[in-house]
Amino acid sequence: MFAVCLRMQRKYSKLEGYEILTCVRALAGQERTLIADLLEYLYEVELRKLYAPLAYSSLHEFGVKELGFTDAQSYERTRAVAAMRKVPEVRDLIRSGEISLTNAAQLNRAIEAEKRALGEEVTNEFKAALVEAASGATKREFQGKLEVILTNPESRAAVREKLTHRSATRTGVQFEIAVTTEAKIKRVRELVDAPTLEELFDLALDALIAVEEKKRKYDSSSDQELYVRGSSASPAKVMGPDPVAGHGAEEEHEPKKKVSSEQSERRTKQLTSRYVPAKYKTEIAKRSGSRCEFIDPLTMRRCASRSHLQIDHKWPLALGGKTTLQNLRHLCGTHNRMEAERAGLGVNIKN
Ligand SMILES: [Zn+2]
Image (cartoon, rainbow, N blue to C red):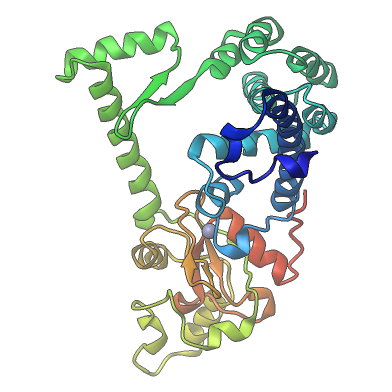
């Protein structure tokens, strides 16, 4: 029956009423099965990080840029997959239609919010209560039950947070704040001329971005040791021209001068140490634009991630690579783990 309902082109208006109803039922059932199957595949994509070699840093980004999901669709599917990982019975309940995609995604948010509020993993009883509340419930009904199941005001507020795309240029934001935060708004309004909450929010975000970017990009004053995981897919790659290294590899061509044995010993020590000097960190940030430098060699697509950047040894120290500017690069967490895994350096990404 199902096949008959597909690709009727423009003949829908010619169908009898009973044929239309039969096809609507058949296709609705198929839609559920398709979504359940799609989630199973996405689950494997996430588990094996199959998006990483394609230069995506997350399943969400892969969903939007590779599969054409909207931002909201991709978040929903990604969160549903996360729910399947945390609570295995969710898989069958999505397939049977007992739990909707929306509720599965919200179930994952509830677990995350509670975990953050408690500062520890949630119990199996808590997960079971969520599954029961989400089953056969509409989005609104489930939300109502969450108000009872979640144990504290912070986690209840967190699952109510919402970003709603209202138009191409405007997004609605909805969240609760504590009275202490409200006091801060009053204080900021005394100090800064920002009459609307929108302007105030925008100014506050600008200030936070400036602080965080300064911390990451120009960490040159810090003398703290930065330990990095040396890794590389193939040491040979480092020998060829590096598409992302570009300029700034000048330390390789330092003028040759007579050095004492003590100096030479110190130099060797530095080259084989995981410690990355502050001036290198600044140079790497300048070169990478504080963005992951992983490139998919097939498409030459470069990863867009700017979060959790780590300094990586292209040719791993463990395999004889050196701490030189030419051998260092910025990688996001996903690509640093992937390269370490490829080089067989014992990082298990299939956690
Ligand atoms: Zn990356």
